[in-house]
Image (cartoon, rainbow, N blue to C red; front, top):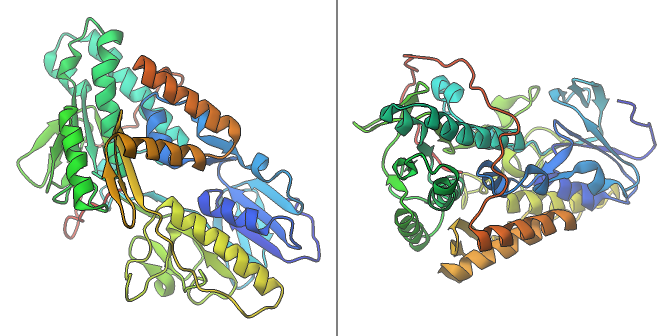
Length: 444
C-alpha cells in the first residue's frame, strides 16, 4: 500500500462514512498515523440519496471527496481498497491492494441492505444504499416511462408506471413522497401523450403504521400527508416474493410492477476474520462495550451501524442512524488519544438523541424532538436547515440549496437524466425461497 513506517502508532479506519470521518477529524494533527480504507473515494450523505433517485439532485451534490476532507491533516493516508479479511492475531488486514498492519483497528463499515434470506427479491428488486444504486434507480424510473410510451398494452403500461416501495420507514416515506410529487407536477408535462394519472405509488409496511420508529402523532400525520398526495399505504402486509413482474405477499394482495424498491431493512456490513460466534449480535452487528471495543478483541473497535452497544435499558443497541455514528466516532477519537497518552480516565459512550425527522414532500415533514413534536411547513423548514448544515463542504451546501429553491419555485426536478441506462440482471422466475418463517420487515 506504500504507507510510510513511522514510530507513531497506526490507527486503521475501515469506512469513510459518518463515523469514520468523525473519528479521523478527532485524530487529526496528533502524534498518530491514521490510515482510512474505503471502496469509494468519496463520502456519501445518505439521507439525500432518495433525491438523487428522483432527479432532485445530482450525485456530486451529496458526495464529497475523502481526500479533500483530510488533505490538510498530517500523517493521514487514504487508500481506495476493499478489505477482505482481518487477522486479529497478527494485527493485520488483507485487502485487494495488499496487506496492512495496524496498532488499532476501527470498523466503520456501516450497513448493507437486508433481504432476510430472500434471494428472489434480492436479485429482482432495486435498492438505494449508494450513489450508484440511486443512479440505477433514477435511470430505471425514467426508462419505465419511456417504455410505457412505446406500448399500447394498458396492462404493460400500468406495470411500468406502478411503483412498489417495501418499507415504511424514513427512506420509504421520503421516496414515496418524492415520486408522488413527480407524478403530479412533472410527468404530465414530460409525457403529455401518456395517461400518467394511472401511475401508482404503493408503500407496503409489515407493521401497523409507517414511521414506526417515530411517535404515533408523526406516523399518523405522515400517513395523512401521503394519502393526500395519492400514495397507497398497505399496512400489516409482508412481501414474500418478487419475480420481476409480480409481487406476492402473506395476504391475498399482489402487485404487478416493473419496479420494486426494497427499503425494508439493513444489517451490519461485516468483514471476514473475526470470531463472530463470540461477538455477533442480531442484525449482523458486532457486540461492543461502552467504549466501542469489540468483545474479546483488545485492539479492535467498531462504531456506527456495524456496532451494537447493547444494555439492559437498550438490548438491541443504539439505532442505526447517522447521529449515533458521528457521536461514536468523535467519542472514540477522544478515548483513543487518552489510550495513546497512557491515561486511564476513559469515558463510556452516552448517546445524545437529537431527535428524528422525515420529509414527505413540499411543505410537509414530521419532526420528533425530545420535548417537542411538530409537523407541517415548519417541520419541513427545520428538516431542510438541518440537512443543509450536515452536508460536507460549502459547495455542496450551496448547490443543494440552489436546487431546492429552483425546485420549489418551478415545481421542477432538473436532474431527470438517463446518463447511464440501467439493465436488470437475469431474473429468477418461479422460485420459492424456503425460510423457517417469514422475517418481520424492519424499516430504514
